[in-house]
Length: 458
Image 1 (tube, rainbow, N blue to C red):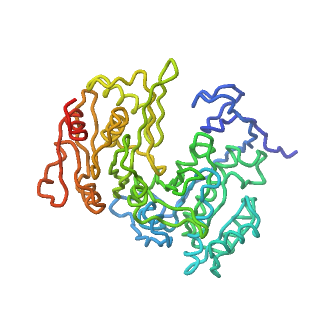
Image 2 (cartoon, rainbow, N blue to C red; image 1 turned 180 degrees about the vertical axis):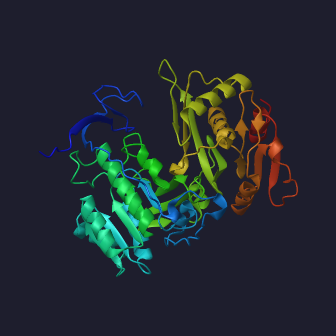
C-alpha cells in the first residue's frame, strides 16, 4: 500500500511570517493581534542522496571567483534610473510598493514600453484584463511591438509563458493576486506570497531576466505580506505621496546595486507619470513670504532638494495642546519643541503646533531641525523670516547646532535657486568662506540663529 504525504497544519503570521503549531491571538514575534492564519503544508520524507557537485559549484578562493560585468539597461525615465542606481540591472529582482492608485502600474508600463523598443518585455496583469491594460497603454502611448501583455493569475502558467517568450524584462502586477494551484492556501496568504516570490526570484537569476514585482501595502504603509519578501529581493521601491497631490515620490529603501537614499520626483498627468527634473523649483514656486515658513535644503542621496517647511501655532482649546507633524518625525518634533521652550523661553505648553513639509516631501535627516524650529518661532512671533534665507542644521538638546554633511552640494543648489544667505552650523562652514554670490552665516547655538532670523535680541 502506497503511503501518501501527510498534511500538516501550521499557523502563520500575516504580518511577519512567524510560524507555530497552534493558533494564538497575539503573534509572539511581532506582537500583532489576530494575524495568525491557518496554512496547510505537505511534509515530504527526506531521502539521503549522495551529493556530487560540478567544479563550478564548489567552494573556491575569493580571488578566483569570476566577476561578470552587467551593463545596466536604461528604463527611459531619468528619475527611475536615478533611484535604481543608474538603470535596470539584468537578472535583478525589484519589489515596487505603494498605495492603490498612486501610479505604480502606470510608471512600470511606461518603463516596459521604452525597454520593449529594443528587447522583449512581458507585462503580467493579475488584477486587470488585457483590455483594461490596453486602455492604459493607449492613454500613455505604449504601443511597442515587443511589449507583450498576459492576464494570468496562476504562477505555473506565468512561468511557462516566461520560459516560452524569454523576455529581458518581466513585470508581475501584483504578487498578492498570483497563486500556486498545488498549494491549498488562498491568494495573498503568507505561504502563497512567499513561494510565488521565491520562484520568480529563481527564474530571474537563472534566465538573465529582470523581474519587477508590484506589492500591495498595508494601512500603515508597509509592504503587505511576510517580511521575507523584502529580504529576498534586490531592490525595494516605495511610492509616496497622496493620490490627490500632484507630486509622487519614488524612494529606494533597499538597493543592492546602488544607493538606498535616492529619490525620484514625478508628476501625475494625463499622459502618465512625468519626471520632475528640478524638484526644488517646483516645490518653492508657490511659497509666500509669510510668518511660519522656512526654507531648507535637504540631501536625498546625492541630490539636493530645497523645500518649504511650514508651521502654525495658536492657543489650544484642549486640556493638552495638540502636536501634529506631516513630513517630519513626530517624536523628534516633540523633542525640538521642548528645546525651544526650555532654552529660549517660548511658551508652547498651551499652544497647538502644526508642522508640514510642503509638496508631500518626507524629511528624515536631522539637518532639518533648525528650519523646523525657525518656522515654529516665526509663527509664534507672527514675524516672517527674511526673504532669500535658507536654514540648515541639527539642534542638540542643549540648544547647540551640530554640523551637517554635504554642505557644498547644498550651497550650490541654493545659489542656483537665487537665495541670498544660508544660516548653518559654524563647524560646517569650513572651506565655504570663499564662496561668492551667497552669504554664509555660521552660528553655534539656536539662539544665535534665531537672532539672525528676526534681527533682534531674544
